[in-house]
Amino acid sequence: MRIDKLLANMGYGSRKEVKKLLKDGAVKVDGMPVKDAKFHVNVAEEEVTVYGDVVEYKEFVYLMMNKPPGVISATEDDVHETVIDLLEEEDVIFEPFPVGRLDKDTEGFLLLTNDGQLAHQLLSPKKHVPKKYYAKVEGRVTEADAEAFKKGVILDDGYETKPGELTILHEGDISEIELVITEGKFHQVKRMFEAVGKKVIYLKRTEMGPLKLDEELELGQYRELTDEELELLKG
Image 1 (cartoon, rainbow, N blue to C red):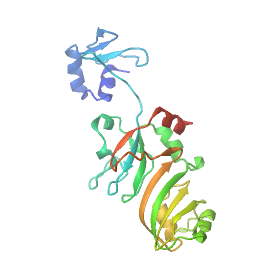
Image 2 (image 1 turned 180 degrees about the horizontal axis):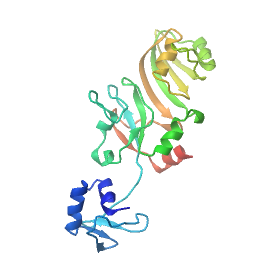
Image 3 (image 1 turned 120 degrees about the horizontal axis):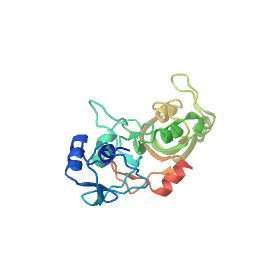
Image 4 (image 1 turned 135 degrees about the vertical axis):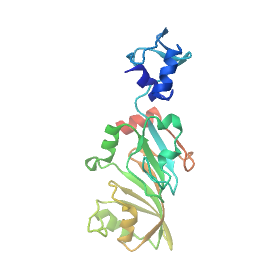
C-alpha cells in the first residue's frame, strides 16, 4: 500500500497534509525516513511510525451502536441526523455504513462496518440471520397472535412474512413482547402487529445474529466489537 494512502486512511490528515509529514521527515518505515508519497509499504511486515508513534493499521472497522430514536440509519442525509454523524472522526475515516437499517424512531442494536462482504452475508435472505426486538404494543397481545406470527402474517401490501417467534412478556392494554424475525422488510415489526390489529408504540432491537446489545452503551454511544464478538459474527 502507498504510504500516503495508508496515513490518510489512518487519520493523519489529507493527502496534502500527509505529504508535508513525509517532507518534514516525520514518517519512518522500519526506522528509515521515507519522504516519497508513492513509497509502498507492507503493513503486515513493516513498522510505520509518525514522530516515533507506531501506526496501528487496520483495514476494517466493526462498531456496535445503541442507536437513539430520531436518527436515521444512513451514511448521509440533507435534513436528518444520521448514525454516521454520531461517530468520532477516527472512525468516520474508515467510511463505515449501517448493516441494514432501523426505522428513525426505533432504537437499539445497529452494526456499522466497512466490510462489505460481511454485511452482505448478514443481510442475505438466504442466511436467515435472526434479529430480536423488544416492543411495547398498544392492545392486548395474545397467544393467538403468537400462533399467527409463527405461521407468518400477511402485510398491507400482500406480502406473507416468514415465521416469527413472538414471546409475550406482559399482557395488558399496553403489552410488552419480544419478537425474533429473520427478514427485514420496511417497518416489518410494526406492520406485522398492524396485521393483527395492534399498534407498536416503542421498538428496540436487542440482538442481531449471535450478538447482543451491550447494555452499558447509552443511547447514541458505540464501541468496537471485541475479538470474541467478531469471531462469533464471522463464524
